[in-house]
Image 1 (cartoon, rainbow, N blue to C red):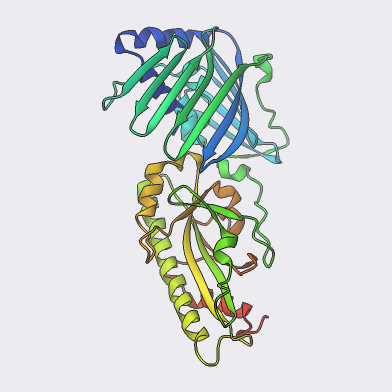
Image 2: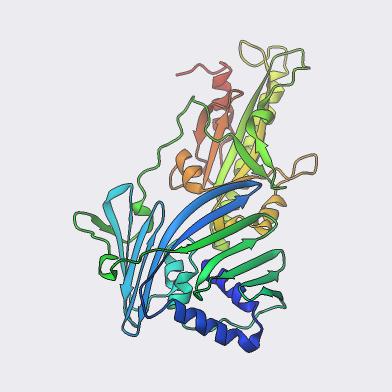
Length: 405
């Protein structure tokens, strides 16, 4: 969900008779003078809470629009007038490049949303957006519990807006069945707007935001996989170690392997369809390899010198952005893949840069093969028609049927 949408949902809670007055008052509180606020963010998914922080500075006068947003991994500067905006962005961990783009339009929150991932800073909409919120497309219940607290409900979503005595925001939170996003907002010294810009001297100028990111450090092969837990389709924690534990009741040695098909979910529906078809093909290839390994391990000769039973667990893993971690998105993906038990095979996690990009940068689908000690055995980047032999041979190599090169 974009910050603008969060903000609009809050405004739609206000009776229509007073919506324009409330919107004008809040806009005035964020205009005509430099404003700076620190936003403390708590994002809870599957009973796990991640904390973050950003600082946002805004200035909107009749002849000038300016903003500076300081995120943990990105600093953004935007400035211009009623017909032009220049946007500059840099990363604190990469001092060699700078993103610079010019636009023949005024600075608005929607312009920033076209370029950057969702920024939980409703101040941007208050300071720069001109249009009143549209009429609700469907009925929404509202409860103005107190003069400084407005609560809205839309489906499974509950949004609360808290106003400070100054007329600006003191906090905001959005709750769904899948997640909870809480913002605590505090004023800070805005400093001089002339110093809000970003010095790009000595940096290579790029127009693609992805070029700012330094190359991700890949997960090390034959070492313990750093991800120990994922979430399942019921939003419960799913520990990998428990799934890899051998069946102690078996008379023969059992070796378990994980084939995890990590994939990023594009925001555009046509791209989603293409990626999900690649995931389906990768699952089919991995399951074919798993069935063949299991059959051969049960033969009298066994599989490898240990003659162990080999069980291979195949699961898709969705790598979602924070804005995608919604109950509806997870339910749609969960319905696509089912186990023999009837439960969904889907696993999911947040942050593609910390997951799939560390397996295979700039790919939409990457297959990670883990052994029973949760070591990363191999990474396979599938084609549109994955070859099950590559997956099978990676596991066979571990049980010494195929000699290690």
